[in-house]
Length: 379
Picture 1: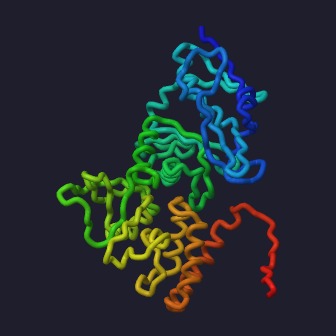
Picture 2: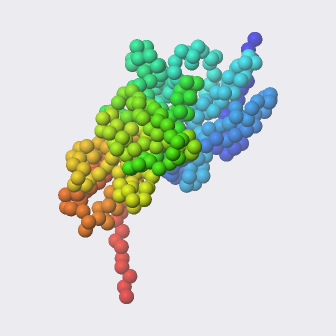
Picture 3: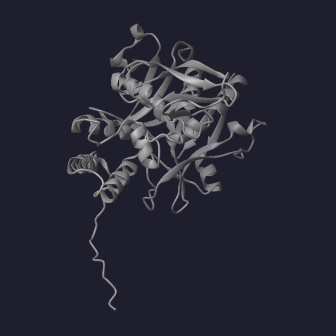
């Protein structure tokens, strides 16, 4: 006969001074001060009357404000936190039941669906949370039941957001989606592999270079990277260079921009390598990151406004660069290169800045502002 073990989440939150929010709202900003929040874990939670279990199974997922240091959690994070513990207890025929306020949450027994599908992702969109089942065979997808093929843009953007540790993503034509939780062994492996090429903090980065590659002669090899691009529903095979001695990956700037023109912006974190004697990468800072992704307002580039602005929108929507980063550097270029560039180039940058300033403007946080004049000190 199956036993039942009751775990009071209210008692745990009170013990660790965590505010429990009794709904499934995705915590984007601090409910107290409006500051930004970071996802964290409280490890080795003390649970009375429970046999010894691994510390990794006794952790609580929370959000902590970077401004006032307040800690918060909600039902979705709580249920996700103790799923591994529930599976361990299930092996001993013990059913874990969470008490969250007046609600009771029981973990269902493991089903074979996890073995049949690639993985599952819960996303919040338009105020409601929906579960999407991922399948590898395009013939087995069923949009009406939220069973989607892994190559669908919505799934690819979701996997990219998880790999980059982003709260969510924006899908053109549908709006913002926020990742609530996910599971699946195959999905986990895919995310780990994706992090190798998409996470700037990962040990593996793709270095963009111009001209001839100077690394370790005799240790190079060509490898095929599967990269998703903004105008492709399936991964694109990109040939990149790998140095076996230093374990670094490289792609030539010419090849990268050829892929970008054909398939759209590659969902790939780039590291710009400066080379002596190469004017392409000289004296670049953040501007080099913009240019590396293909942005240019120069006379020779010839890109029309719509093409440049689509690139900027893709950079923001994919999370490769933030809107504030791009705006800051466009403003810097407009301010510092007035006497160096033609009026046509300046006008292009100003048009791009105006486009970005109005991009998603109604979806940003609103504040009331008052203009304070800058009073000059009297001598």
